[in-house]
Amino acid sequence: MIKASKKMKVLEKHKKNFTDPKSSYRALAGIHHAEDGTVYATDRHMVLRMLGVYAFKGPVTFDAQTGEIIREEYPVKVLEERFQTEWETGFMLSGKEHVGEAARILRWVKELYEYYHPLYGVTLFSQYRDVIIHLERSGIRFTVKLADFEDYRKDFRIGFTPRLLYNALRFFEDTGSTRIRFSFAKDPRAPFLLSDTDNRIDILILPVVRRCES
Image (tube, rainbow, N blue to C red):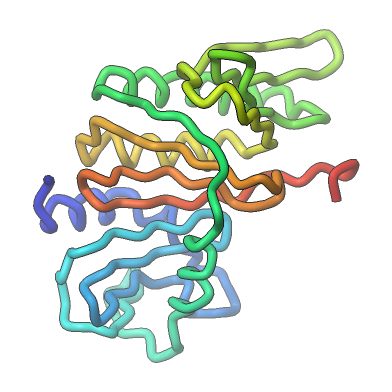
């Protein structure tokens, strides 16, 4: 298990991806240290939770940019409700090399997405024994395998923003995670979860809900 100090060092590097300094709800500009030693950070699109850190005596929230204490209440209860989603299926990335490879794939997908702005976004789905990423627009089609899919009896399909998944994988790569579990709910509109249970780090990502699905 990695040390709490390393978790906080990686969070310091990636804090701009997990906080929202422009939010009208000022607490979201901060990193929250709960009484039980859990650290939270969220920009509404992603939620980072690191258990057993105990970096500061909580509950206290520090502005991620200035370090000032934010007095506004942090939405711990709301965030924890998100983590209590009933997960139906998922897959595992095992080995540092596979985590790094997945991050590189997402970097390519992110750059394609930002260049072409595909009308139907990007889809992550299972296809028999494979986990596939698919991007498509008029005249352009990009499909790549991300991982093996062991739970082939329960398929999933979800739209997502490549930048968010890339940022999450880069976070895990920098912590040195060797096993990341992806979990999906039955409802494609629910968040999906990336977990490193060995190091007690979780990241929730909100999916993209297309017009036809809303």
